[in-house]
Length: 108
Image (cartoon, rainbow, N blue to C red; front, side, top):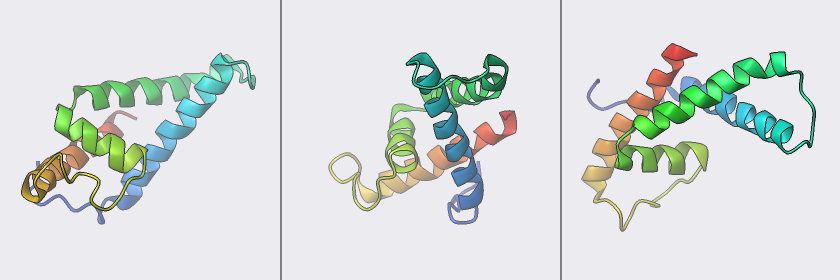
């Protein structure tokens, strides 16, 4: 892992990965809930993306997982972490969490 992970430098990749995951999750939920029908052959890629992302997120340490879920998937910003981490601990976990999250791109 690189020291001082630069989120801004990797923003495009992070946004792409997150968009793929959220879109796939939505399509799978719509299919499951019979809201919309998708050809199962077209859902294979979405299933692959969602299952690999969830496996990767679940593999993260608890603190890293909490950061990715809050900042990336839920879009929280600001000082949401106050009360959970000191600023230095938060930044240390955040850098590691984003580096691991971006590792998901290697498998998609």
